[in-house]
Image 1 (cartoon, one colour):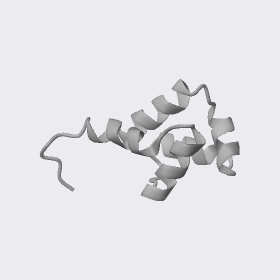
Image 2 (cartoon, rainbow, N blue to C red):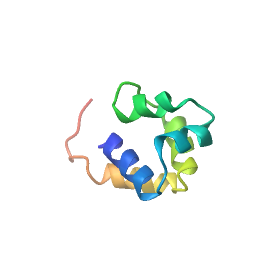
Image 3 (tube, rainbow, N blue to C red):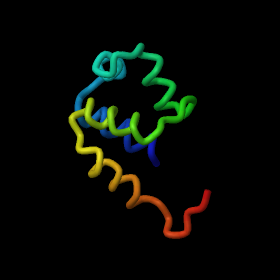
Image 4 (cartoon, rainbow, N blue to C red):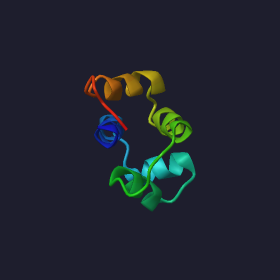
Length: 74
């Protein structure tokens, strides 16, 4: 869910992985690792990525939260 929303937000913004990496000041594989689920992100990184895409982090998180089942566990 998280990865799908992030990839969708990036594509909707018309931003390539390379451009997002530039905006984040990181190499392109950093974005690829995140999008493939090979690298987890914390809430601060989520916030920074959302802002780099021109998205409201709260609204983006709401998209994720709305897709979670009511009985989600960890």
